[in-house]
Image (cartoon, rainbow, N blue to C red; front, side):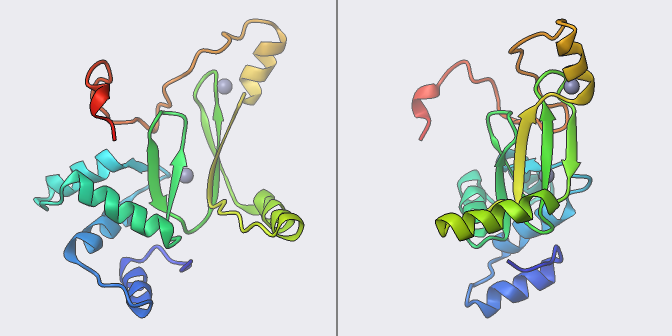
Length: 177
Ligand SMILES: [Zn+2]
Ligand SMILES: [Zn+2]
């Protein structure tokens, strides 16, 4: 995994591996690199941002490029509890603690996961891709309230910082691939 968020460096890395960099691939990397403050994008949001700048990249192509980058370890694909994946550059690795009650999201660094990765490799020979992990639970405030019995149990919250961007799911489920 290249330790960079710089588009030109990522492209140079991909070229060294023999990949062809189309204009669409470059544009998707540019949108991913623009992300600020851990406000990660869904595939739909990346597609929308590309459309806003007049780039005619269709949704299927956006997902094909995202999955290609994911398989190469450049992009992480994470379920943050909204029912759709968010995609972000895998470097630097970081993780999120998401409160199931109030939706508060904390961002933590990779340090606690270094030992886990090492253990999984040593014990199971398993190379874990843990570069962007979402852990669900209860924040300090909510766990204190839970012990006072006022926690609203099992209420899934809309993560206020990461929304799905999908239209209504009420109809046309049959066309899902
Ligand atoms: Zn993140
Ligand atoms: Zn909370």
